[in-house]
Length: 111
Picture 1 (tube, rainbow, N blue to C red):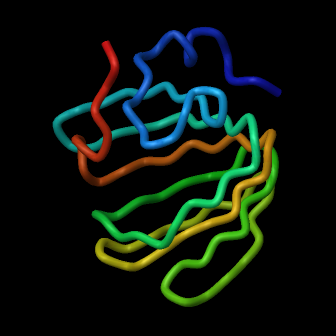
Picture 2 (cartoon, one colour):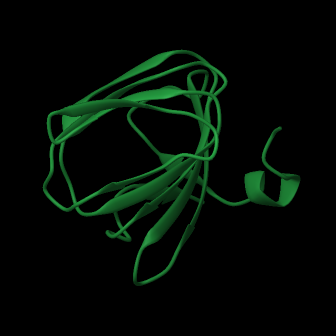
């Protein structure tokens, strides 16, 4: 199920992936960033680290490696990544996730 139209009307994010691979929408406050991601094509997310992140898979599948542990996440599964912990993923086309970042400036909003 696609995100509701009022979600997709939120500003997009300046992410390092083309718009034909991932669609974004986000809400930001001084305390954090909530991002809505829709992956249109398979994507390999290289290992990286940043501030704390929590996310939930709405639809699709992510093979996530977090702190050296690999697990498959599907609809209804949530993940929590502590600040500074290396993580990377294989994200399948059709996957939708909601991610909440501790860092309000993790990505720049496109306005």
